Length: 129
Image 1 (tube, rainbow, N blue to C red):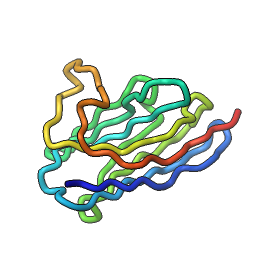
Image 2: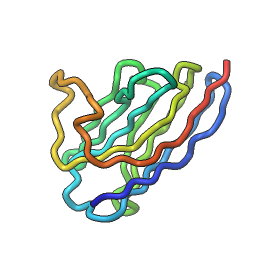
Image 3: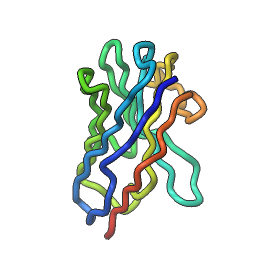
Image 4: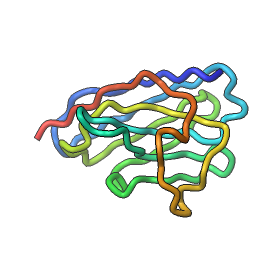
């Protein structure tokens, strides 16, 4: 069992920055990938970025490429999402996720929430115009 706890959300103006954190605990040794998803009111949960533990490769949704950076501090078992150039459409609840078996989304697989078995409770990000 893996426990994930997010932090770092808040309210910023357009163009601002935030850094989200996701602390992992429990049985973390078999985690293959971790990622960030987001869900705005009335919309489906969508994938934002993925970090592959083994080769430290990353994958980003087109909507955040060049603005968001995902990283992992192995010593702290903590996943980060640095968000720069924030836009009002980035406003959402952001969730951390992890799994032991992960698709190579760079090959074209659709990033789906159902691909991940462990989830945090979420942290709210609000970007004002």
